[in-house]
Picture 1: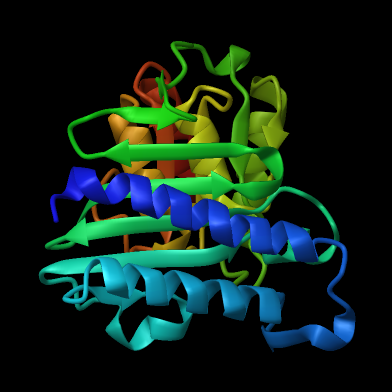
Picture 2: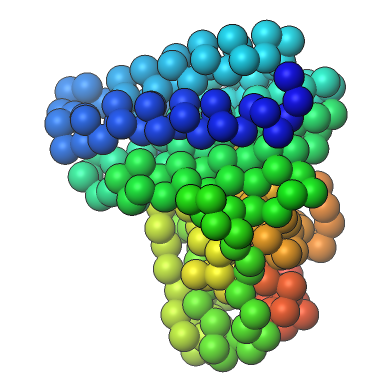
Length: 265
């Protein structure tokens, strides 16, 4: 099956699983939640969503590998085709009844994203991208922000929640941006942060301590929407590097040096 032909069934799959998630929004009790580590929660909704996604994607492409929280042993085995999935990005939001969560699916070809879908079930928005064919929101073409001034920008980030080695430089950087931008937002879903950067709602996004399944689809969205993606040193080894800068190409010359100066070490 050609990659372009996979997009529609993947979108439909996301919508079906998203409907299941919305059915359980505000209905999951604390006794149904497993704590996998500091601030790393998982519920039966995550697990059932992953099961449904995996089974359907395997049927679509039997030869593909999988990367996800339950497939971490394969995380760097990216030869051939690999599905990178986050069945519920924003679990903490979901468990608190906050409707800001997403399903993120990317297909890698020899380690490079060629298809990406970020579906926001409770918000009714589906972001899609195919390599070389642009990025779309609910079927309409999207582009990154055209703003080139940091003072007029709205930024997104994620707070460190289990590795705190760079906490002080991160807080120092937040202080810089609080004084020099129109604001910072923390959505609680890196996939949504990247999707919103791709469509120009955010001018830029940066975060650390991320996994490949958090960002794989979003990387393709931002690039196909005309944006820049790199790590804190300006390198392109982002997918497995646990840190990311995603930015409008217009703002990048001013935004990247500010982040890099604080967080590159």
